Image (tube, rainbow over all chains, first blue to last red):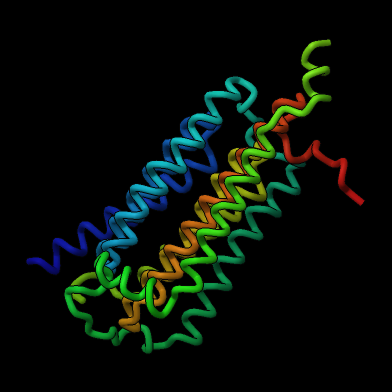
Length: 179
Length: 102
């Protein structure tokens, strides 16, 4: 019974994931795109949970669906009508080529998986209940991956400084705005 | 595990990645291109978490968290660029921004 329930939840989340993903790239209104991406991230968090990634799922909801997407929505609101873009770029040929490129990438990945992975993907390691818990993530971050942890903070700092510099109004722009 | 195995995770991950690629190639609005990039990063994250579960090692989840931080940094700079473009009254259309084309 529990098995069946896990399958149902997994398939629902996976279906929602693909559907909202398609909606992100097909919606004409950037607001619906951004809102669909929030749904996409939330259903991905469900998949993370079912793969024992509890902390990653929580971070996904808090950082991604929360903070990052709110920033997106603010910018879309700031741009207003200017954010509305024509649906697709280029000629019919470029559009067809883009779809073919994406589809063939999918085919290549599938074939590579089927050929190389075989049945090695089926025997999963048994994990304890602590696997993926915040305590375990914190322990690994502060022991084995301390350097990555510290460098991540520097990357975020540089990005924050870059965002501020890009957002500053230069003197030339002020003159532009006045004239 | 009682639920779907790792191949299912990889299938969803590759489908999502292809959706992201199609979005980046098809759409002209830099905003939607950024959103499609997010889809691609998350597809990679799903693979990381799935493989982490397969091998019973935490390293994959750590990498997924690092990808999340990099995505936040990328959004910060990308949205800054889009706002700067809007301030300079440039068209928000990646096909018309050809100044740097060689």
